[in-house]
Length: 211
Length: 159
Image (cartoon, rainbow over all chains, first blue to last red; front, side, top):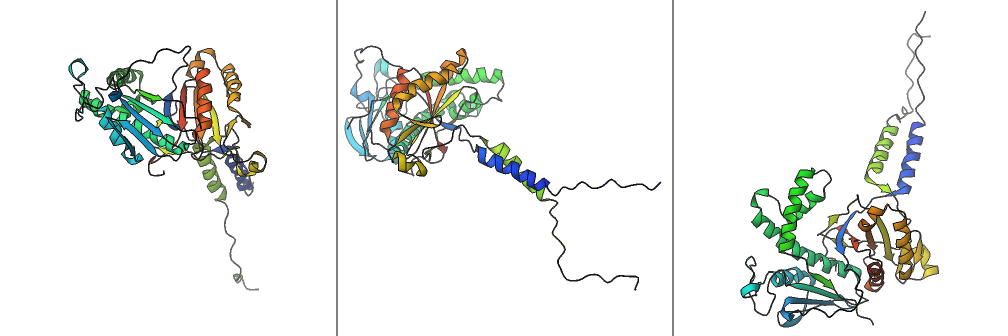
């Protein structure tokens, strides 16, 4: 008996089916942006408590007006600054280490200006923005301040744990990475906590000015 | 008559489309892998700002999205061009964030409620006023974990 070849399946409409699926996915999905600046809001205050007394030299007072200009009051001077200089100014302020005796900062490498911050624990960055400030500017300011903290934390992380070969930001990313094993995570967490204690992010946002 | 037929000349041979499905499937798989199903239909303009100190949003924790921006082009005739908040699929006032949060929390298991992150997707041209109002409501409602969703890029030069 003659061997009959199996008839070929017509695959001509396969492309149509695939296109249909493709278009369905194009319409119902979007490319996700799942990264951003993580922040924590201060908890609601029930009753008005007396504000703690903070020395003026320990505050890095930053305000952004409705024209997105930055005004900085710190270290005994008041000036307008450019966004590009903000990171440098913030680091200079945080790293100043002007404290004496029990407020002395052993790890600060700043120029010990007595009119600027005492140490990392005391230094506070305060930000006030106008209701008409543009969001992009606000994010840029936030970004620069986080960058200043990260830069100092990186430095201290490298100083304290030189044999890990990574810096604070990388350690934090590894800690958040679900592929890191629980054992490594616990070790990383311990180190991260030490650095966070050493250089706490003391960043306060005032309620915006009403116009 | 002749044993060998003369080859027909003229007329191009048809182009084979047999590999077309392969190409389309490749595209399809790319889109399936690189994208996620839309959370909400955007009704506001949402050009996110960029920043470089970003962290990945933790997908293990529940996330709720709040969008702020000008109404998109096709809604501007009805709703004007002032910044608006979008919750789920409709415009809302800052006060409406409170019931929105309540319903988001009601849908979660109890132990996850304190870990709820609010992702703020705010248009880079939006003004801070409306965002401050939302933040105030979030503070009052004790939803303190927030994330300003941004793209990766240089934050300073674009200003």
